[in-house]
Image (cartoon, rainbow, N blue to C red; front, side, top):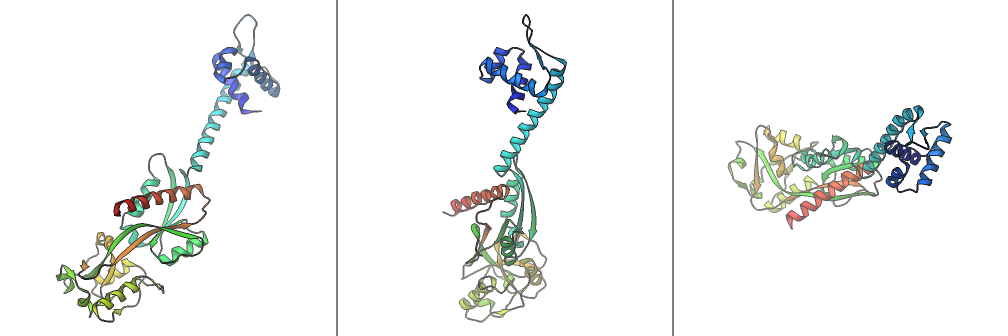
Amino acid sequence: MELRWLASFVVVAEELHFARAADRLHLAPSALSAQIRALEGHLGVRLIDRGRRSRPALTQAGRLFLAEAERTLAQVSRAEAVGRRAGRGELGHAEIAYVASAASSGVVTGILASCSAPGSQLTVGVRELETPAQLEALVAGDVDIGFLRWRPAYPPGVTAIPLLTEEVVLAVPEGGAAAARETVPAAGLREARFVAPYFDEEYGCRHQILQVGEHGGFTPEIAPPVRDFIAALTLVGGGHGVALVPASLGRVRIPGVAFRSLADLELTTRLVGAYRRGETSPAVRGVIRRLRDQAADHTASVS
């Protein structure tokens, strides 16, 4: 049984006039009659009584069949709509990972909000992972989108686009000498103990700490690495050192922590969105499109 037969039958049932029904369907009346006969032949029952002296009328079987035909066509229409929306990335699921510092930047929540905007029914799973673990998860297929700190190189098959560039500031214990300054010169950190996330990478927080030491003319004392910036800030609040952190972390209120800019050294950090090249999932591609839109907005704002 063909769907076009059902569609033609429904129009004939609405019009109860073959010529008008044929006009609506852009068919010749003979072609429409042939479709109805084919449908009746397939079912083995007459659906329309074609009286010679009166208008066509639905038989009892026709009336029963009409209700089912309308439901079937409506379901087909819904299925087509779902398929098209899924193909446009408006439906489906994506797994998202983010570094803890990205949560305070507003970038992650902005993307999540766009996924739940009217007209979109994307569902997302979120998890907090440090940058190296995110890259491993992207390669393994355990994560679809990553929000992480910029790296000079990424694993094969993974690409990244910049989403946000922000100042790196100094987190210091409240009540300490550094907190009493409006800005802190690099040389003023000679006696400081630096706390930072570090994952045996060539580039990262450790690299920037060494830049501060070089600029201030000293070799920094670096504490054993911690898991993330939140852990670093917790140690700072407890008086166990200072930390270089993205400025957006100033929105995270941890007791005992003050934030100050560096007086004589400008450091920045970039947040990027990473994903697999050649992604095939329409839902994930939909999130990637949102990433690209946000990247374009960032580029426009800094140009």
